[in-house]
Amino acid sequence: MTEPTAPPSSNPVLRRILLYGGLLALAVAVVGGLLGWFTGGSRGLVGALLGAAMAFAFLAVTAASILAANRFYGTDAYLTAFFGIVLGGWLLKFLVFLALVFLLKDQSWLEPVALFLALVAAVIGSLVVDVLVVARARIPVVSDLPPSSRVG
Image (tube, rainbow, N blue to C red; front, side):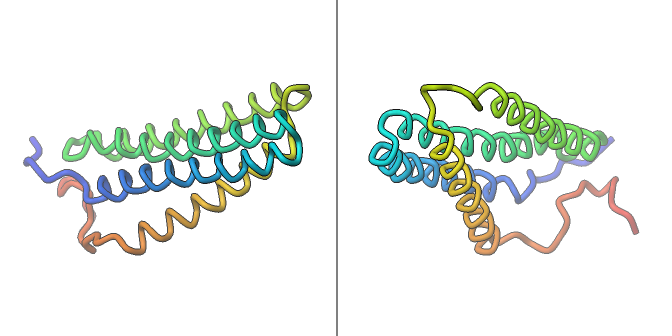
């Protein structure tokens, strides 16, 4: 039987990453959408908006999978559930990304350069968001692992 414990301290950090990631995706959609519209018309606008949406969806899957896995905190299955859920989310993202690449590559209604540039801007921006949020987080040095799974 496991003792009741507090939820992992990473939850507020992940929620903040989701919030700032959403704001970043909105900024990429607005700026990329305007640039896409002026350079490629409606095809450029669609490409930039789709790129921003894809980037946010992929960022959200990672954070949401970690938040979902943290619900198992304090149970004997925590580590197994955590890695299974998070790695499953990454695999899902990879497969969806590949499917989207093959489905969208020759679409006449889409400007692929705008899509690519919006994705790159959003991915780089999300890495910056992750670094800033984690660097400013007040996470204790003590492990989030339940006592039954600690070594030592």
